[in-house]
Image (cartoon, rainbow, N blue to C red; front, side):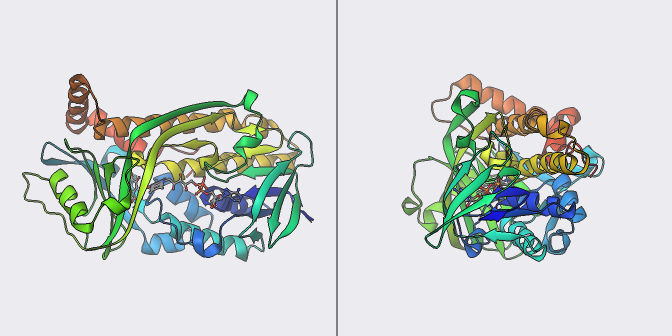
Length: 396
Ligand code: FAD
Ligand code: DHB
């Protein structure tokens, strides 16, 4: 049996960031993670870091490689009707931008920092369960290499993503879950090619949405809207490129740069919020409490916002015996979450065509796109949300 102050389930961005922020304030934690270190450091997920997330990682001393190897983007393009329209982020937000730096690189930086802190990350665990969250000595039980283990702690950070056990440990009677499943998925690829554009392109077309993103000068990340039940096996490289070309047809003479595809995957699109995000000594952060469709690039960034609030609340408890931050955690965290949820839903509806839509919905979308690129107020609203609203309780 191990004793620690905060037991954390999940070594994703939320769990690792929580552990590191607590360590910087002299609070110890132990993380349990079901996958291996190699696996979490290689899983391809997010690419876009908001301005507040970037500033946070720098201030926590884990931003050095991100600053060196990430790419600052000062604009995004919205493409529709065969034309591209630029949204100038710093100009519309008082100087803010976003950084393209892959989530698995953030994970590598955070794992290295957490291990250098002397914190234990138990990788490859199974049968994780939560106990005693209603009392003052909760515990996490799990198996490692066939042996039963237990961590006794003061608090549990439930950072185990959408499918983890933490949320389920909150009694169903006090959990209000809001869910919307979209009738589409994103087909994502990584390919060896030079960038097709200096900035991300969010493209709407009658065949469905396309996102052109990037990773490095030689590796590009792209997505197209697909049937969520489709299989990557149905998509040869030729068919994928033909679909991208058809959706990106334009009057500007702009051409997609193609190359060898070396990774393919389909992701589901959901909006989900669990209210409450806390129960007794258990506090949820990140995807364990909320999911957004990927269109606004908000998921990881919302996780960071939760952790800023939660770490401060835990620090106040130990330093000043002040429970106010813990008691109000869910109510405060969920406000920023709802903003991100609404923005992601709004971006999704503006850019995707869903099967069976009526013609009035299509016209609304067209009008919204035209308004967004022609009105400074509308463009500024998109830009403000896209670069990320400030984290409550943190001056970044
Ligand atoms: P996770 O990253 O899901 O981490 C949870 C961890 O808990 C995992 O390592 C998991 O193995 C572990 N775990 C689960 N169950 C257990 C268990 N029983 N026991 C122990 N451990 C467990 N977000 C953005 O902000 N910007 C983007 O550009 C963006 N693009 C995306 C693109 C794609 C293709 C995808 C899939 C997601 C994207 N997201 C983006 C969303 C973002 O990746 C997630 O919101 C983010 O990973 C959430 O972090 P988390 O730590 O809460 O959860
Ligand atoms: C990426 C993912 C997103 O969801 C998004 O909105 C922008 C970029 C990416 O993986 O690069």
